[in-house]
Length: 233
Image (cartoon, rainbow, N blue to C red; front, top):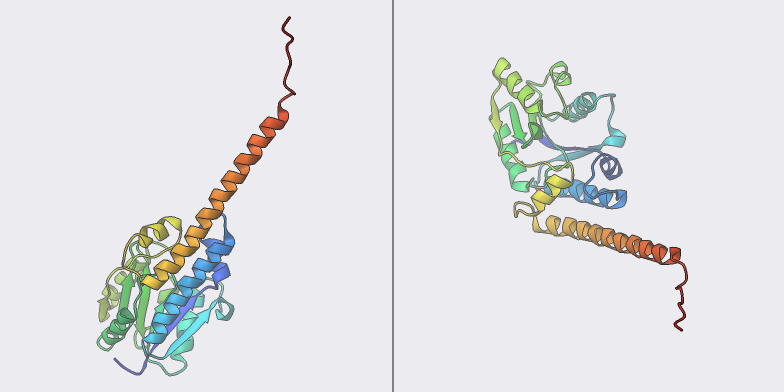
């Protein structure tokens, strides 16, 4: 591990994440709470690594496209004197402190370290100032299933010294979240916190269904006429 390596958490705010990701159906407040849990998880794992770290969230990001914002953030860290930067986001609940330390160790012998996700993107990028190429990175297909392929083609073409970390699952919606919560591959405290939010959302939905059903029944009763009386002679 080299002291010239810094970690960077590159993230949107929780409210921005909630606007674009539906972890819980039609509940912005609970989506925001889950987003904040995921951001806090990444931050704590970074902080516990013992490495120098920085957080650049959307209010501090500069640029029009994602690629511009990302490269500007990386260059900001290089400008502080660090020779290698390891960047992570907030959508990998399986991310661990041990994995970050392992990535930093790998950077001592490599110019590029990639952490692929299960959908063709990456959850981690370690890159050295020596091989950093702004124009190259700006042409990559960020936020698509082709991003990992773009990086691998680049390292093959330029013969970069690289290492690949274990693939992790990312979480961008309710299906991925529900699948991951069934596993034991994430920190127990994070799992329990998210389960609590999801459970409260489910209870709220059930209450809404019962409420609407009661209204429907009441309306049906109100539409009925008074009972008719027949005289038996």
